[in-house]
Image (cartoon, rainbow, N blue to C red; front, side, top):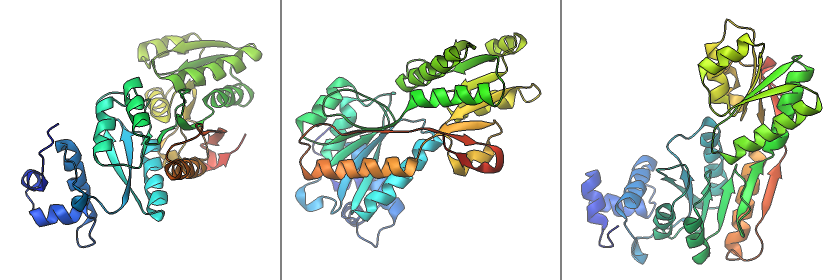
Length: 316
């Protein structure tokens, strides 16, 4: 990206005044939140590097998201914005072109002099190294990573798989189980492992599908598979909706209460998202205060069953 991008370039691109751009970057109250958001995003896109006089007066945390943000991560981002705003921080969303954070993404964040970075996606090695080099705290949310100094807040996916298997076996009287995952995603594999482990303990047969293919699902149903656990609620909803006329039992994963009634499958697995967000914010505040020194902080949260019936959550 060019280093000679100035306020006038942003103003021309957005077709607004130079004064409006400057005041938006300084977070003046007379500029709408929508305009501020557009100006910040255009600044990232053009590679604008604020001079000291033009820096946003708030402290900034970058959040990396992919183009297919789930309802869960959308909700979590909203909660993070609320919590960080209480501490006088702004969140800037940086979209990624792939299913991981690239070094280009991290460089975009660093050009805005961010105080920390949060990601729902695994960072590429070189991207993570750049964040470490600049001593900018990096927190991975919802995924697990063992790299040094990688701060992590995540759900116990394996436990979630075990809970799903237990419910299908004990409450739905399953005799054959199927897990429908997403190939190449590490948390999907952990959910699968927990699901298979519990099924084997109970002597129940399990079939694994690495993606949702209706032809395979229909064949399995003909073979007596009526109990399914899906990687997330979107897969579960699609599966159930396509098989309404058949007697099947489906459990999803993410289980956001405010969206629960939109889905018709029997249950989902979730965690205490409010506490996860609070932990993530607390970790970042600690790491920002000590300039990212010390060992990584890792918080694993227990999962629980969120039943569809009566739209209430049961904790296991």
